[in-house]
Image 1: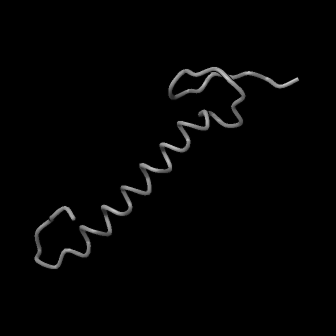
Image 2: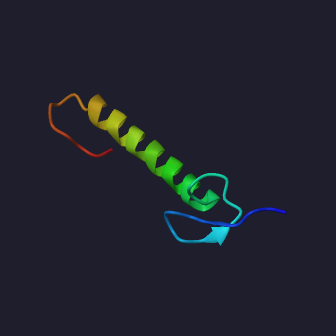
Image 3: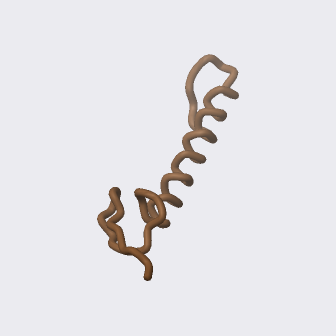
Length: 53
């Protein structure tokens, strides 16, 4: 029998292996990847100013 837990981020109830459900984990991974891409883009800006790419 599988245990049912509540996601600590969104409150969804289901088969959760970690603290967050799969959807919240995937969103967090996507957000982390976007933040890294943004950080690299800002670093590559050579004009001394910060500009979004």
